[in-house]
Image 1 (cartoon, each protein chain N blue to C red):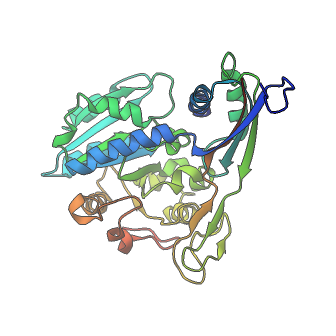
Image 2: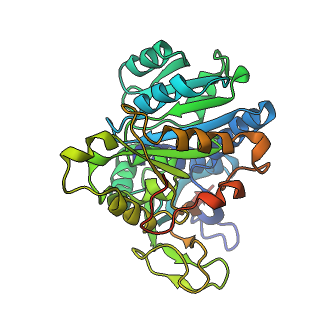
Image 3: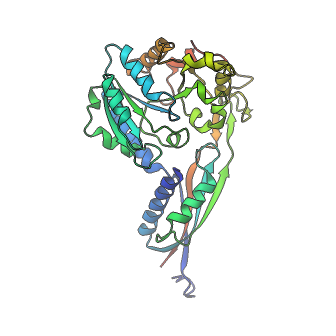
Length: 252
Length: 113
């Protein structure tokens, strides 16, 4: 009650907060990030539409990344198919079944780490739920964000989903083996669209089927290992500056 | 529809503040949402209407302020237009988002006994 004047009206109090609504998620993500940094594990948040080829990218990576230990947490709404595919490819993998949730958050990743041998890894991929909207909003504690974008998705996809592509450190333009069947799609125009939404635009054309682009991808992965990056890898390490994409130019 | 999980986090934050101050109800919440935050203001309002029932926020007005995305050159401060190549035409360096990614609870107005 207002006891200044004795009128009996309830007292209204204004509290200035000025805090991110997802501050709780941010704290858990920072906790995850600290774990990864202490153990020298590079955590990579791999995002993209359903069917963009995220799992195929990891399968192809496992076939060629000799001497490095790969692990993956695969976010999936209803099945553990992706994790099974990854295990068959030789990747230590575990499913995070989200039910109806359209994204992973830092707490889901943290819980999944509890009975997962992540400390032994060089790279921990977090294959996010297939979705170009929600996953971009949640920090998981990753060092870098990689987005898979298939050539079949159209040249203007980056312009339609600027929030996702703004957060990307690297975009893998996947399924380029299909380009001969897509006469109206040019990778240069995808790269140009990316340069309008992604300030440090870096993209790599990639085919899990033919292996094209795999060398560039493996070279990029080597650059984000702890020994070759600054202590705090967010934002992207300066070591990558030489690979930055000029507007409309595609890295080979 | 991550707006639902954002509303849950918002209500939990407000409930904690209200408990700490022995509030009996919440009158108004002031929230800032950036155009490039990935949060849809309309969906957030709908999610709030759904989730505020039987919480301390039940009769609260949710005041949503949209913040436009603004890109600028980190070197010279020149504005880089949204939709343009995100690189300063003068300095050649990548642009930086100065506003537009906010998902922020600014203020709670509550009634205390």
